[in-house]
Length: 258
Image (cartoon, rainbow, N blue to C red; front, top):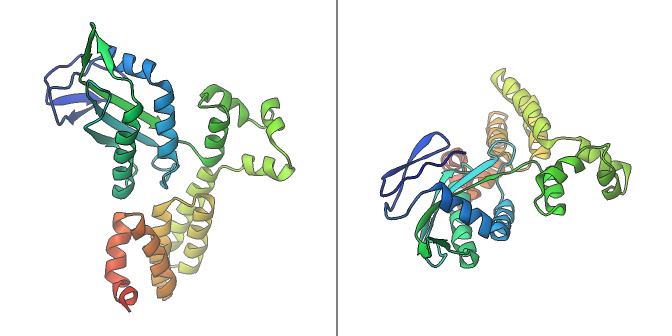
């Protein structure tokens, strides 16, 4: 990540893309960014943990980038999602969490003055096993990486049964991808029963794969299983998944209103 010193601009370059800013009176500088990260390590980690509790797809939408407008007291009057979860409802909740976490942020002092600064916070999320190890190591990525290796003494100490070891060997993300792709192939071949099986397996591997859930709903529709289809679409709708909302309104609204 490369930050360029910019003041009073309408655009900032973040990860190679120009992003419009809402208030050009906030300064955007490498130095300010570094001060903020150094002085708010615990707060940034705690915010990540709160975001991690939200239900979104870590396998297919694993990066969350937030542009934070930090005032001279450490509060955040507003924030922007740069890279989100693809779920509008969840992205809105992330903004709420950022503003709530800002109550504990330390403001930035530069040349003996508190300043209004733009801060870019980027989080990378992983599959459930990796996230569990990350929590156990208090955010130490290197230690977590060691713990997910089955030949690591640290990991062996954390496992109680052979079943736990097998669970850690299994990657929900790779299983999700495999069954999802198989489900798409079966759907395109009009083999909807096999599509249902594969999309169900993808969801079992990764319960937050809303694309698989949506396609499972469509597969049930094609198999004339409207009740099961609407159950899938309703779950996607509740998570504000756009395609599921449209499909639910088209196929299931009358059933829901009965």
